[in-house]
Image 1 (cartoon, rainbow, N blue to C red):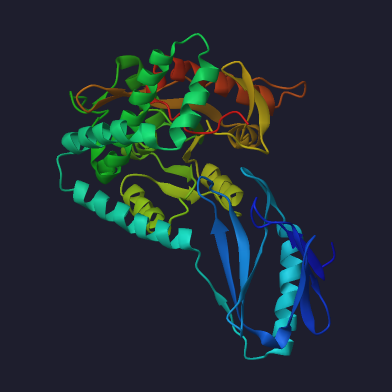
Image 2 (cartoon, helix red, strand yellow):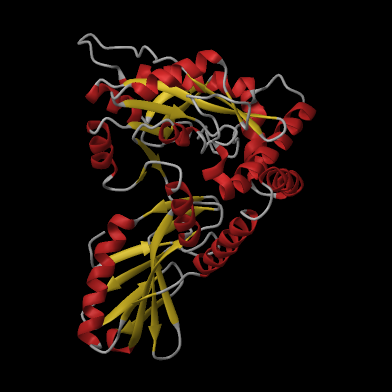
Length: 412
């Protein structure tokens, strides 16, 4: 469609409606009805982003507030069916920009102001509660707070929507396991997730292993892993580290900084602003450079590698635009960022993981540098390297399936 027309379906219970920009008015029609509103009768235009429950995607939305008190909502999200949304941003934005101009011409006093969707308000409130809870947990004994959160989520988790996704993922990965086996793994997953969330409150205090003077403590490491970590701590060559959502997945990002290396971590900020700000504040106490996933990510990653930093990232999530790999015998897509960086800079790649042990202890392991497959030109091959990394992560998960976050929609 041109910038003078736009159509979308707001819900599965509504008909698709087409809007047209005529010289003096906005016209709309569906299969049953037609209508129009003059631009000078539009009193205000609200602009905001809308999200849907259970989805992290956000879509631009506008509400036209008429002098009559009625409202007309226009969205980039076109509802195809109950759980499928088509993003029509490419046609929505030009239409809305043209509409804004016509409203300003018809009613120069009509403001275009930021709006707020109810879900965003609810999430903002929930985010503030989460921040308050983390600060309260800071005053609680870490082991007791972790245990209580694990117990609470074991009770609450099975009632959450994500439980069905996790069970389906587990059944696909382990077709040989009985329903009772799957439920035991799921219970362990919720326990680990609850503990990991509570441990954010004490993240800067959790790493207590000293390479120069190893003593029994919260972090456990055998001699082989300690030797590998010691070699990495004295090197000044840039290195890439991959990790997965296993046990407390934040701890591997603490290791390089604790060992005296410059480090950087790629992360995806939560959509809830208060919580995102609190997590950045917590991570800055014990991690190096924090690199958010945004339009400038690749430039920040390049700078970190050129400075000789240790760069870490989680690589066990579905990425629609990624490369194809096999995971638990089924095809999925992964982000090839780490392999592309290794190909460009010829950096060594290491695997890094934490294993949760009883009594609020953790075992840290780091692999030797992997030997990435190469193409006929001698350059690191992107797809085969990501398959190798995925195979390593699958092996980790098979060792401790209850410590992996099965909530991700890994196969789509």
